[in-house]
Length: 138
Image (cartoon, rainbow, N blue to C red; front, side, top):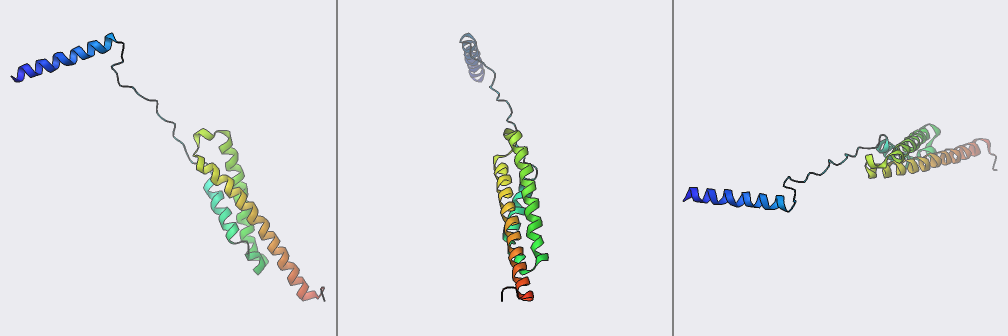
């Protein structure tokens, strides 16, 4: 009985294979080409983080000039890294993660805004400090 079932399945499978070959159906499993792996854009996350630090600390320029250098430095680094990362992403966007291109752009913008605000707050602080010591505005 077991031998009869084996031979039945063997014949049945062979008939299916012959039928598929006659119908010109590929019996090999279809293989898809391997997907291209996407990597991180170099410097995009650094630009994003430094831009955030610059925005979060821009008011330190109002406290004194020396602490105001912190957002100024982080803003310049965030802006320059973001600019470079954006350029790298624009050369070949298919090989990089799209979110990292966005991180580079946001980091560049935040770094620039933080940089400008830090300078404005330092200038305002210096005007106030000079106005108090020299009594120019009396």
